[in-house]
Image (cartoon, rainbow, N blue to C red; front, side):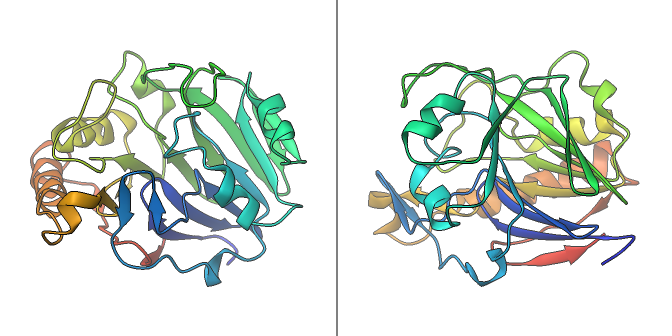
Length: 250
């Protein structure tokens, strides 16, 4: 749709941004099960046909999933942080472009810009160390995809943006360092001067043993805390809470 962007929250850090005739997919994780994690509900791949480019924020197992990349087909273009392109080539992913923080890349009518992120850059699970990053997708709208990050000095320089896709939680009952929580994610929204905020990285995967006792409450609690924090810290932001599979037009 010209002049607007369609945003589909596929789940976890996977978001489809359909803008100006280009379909961008972030950090695809499409499996019903990954190691000890189970997906809550089904993933719909019907909306994912014809993806033009995939953006990978970093090489941790829940953001760089080779099986999910293969499921998108052999011709999809994959943009990865500098240093892990050769790894994907060895895994049979053919069309790979490396991007560094500060670099810009043209994909059809869109510009993709690599931006900083504050997150652990340990080499596991693939044995390749690459600096985590976020992306700003620029077309009729500017869309910021944070990947995994905590607040960092200079985050305000990324904005202002029309849409901010910000992680607010994860898959467990607690968060480690290098992650935004519901309150710090609201602060990020303020720093970014976002017009529209969409929480991601929540409500999708849970540990298998917890799932056997029913869907844990911490996912819903996180989005409720985020909503309350946004109303307090960034009250003028248009907050749109999407559950996996839901979409909005911005």
